[in-house]
Image (cartoon, rainbow, N blue to C red):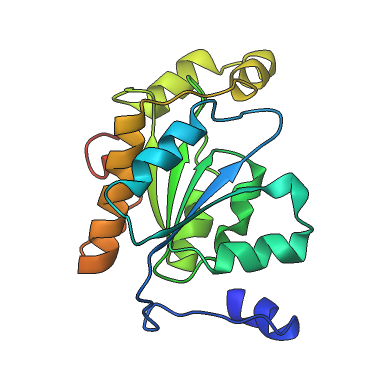
Length: 191
């Protein structure tokens, strides 16, 4: 899908085999709703282990859709809050990765199939929850609860996010990532 769309819009498409010398890490920011409150600190800490990386923070609301697609297509790793903008993952290169940060008690898996089909690796922060399926079912059993939880601003521990970015880059570099049908970070640990 990425190739067909990009070809019709004359956008460049980077494949997994087309390596770049510079690591590109995109940080998706939002002006309202489900903002990552400590995003500046996260961006600053990501830069420390990757001084040569191009780290770019963007407000998706500021970009028309075509510019969003193009921006996503240039990234190797994206750090973002869970949300509708993640559909842009289909424009990541086939070896791309997403670090997805979830609001507490709200862990829908709606983008993982799209990611797997696109060859995108997903690394998720679940607020320290050991079984996101059970926690989501327990706390998000009504539409009112789901709307309340999903609207939360986020403030994940910086070291947890950095650890996921590091894992994403290491597995990207080594080819050590294996896909699975479970929650991305908890492959095989529960059903």
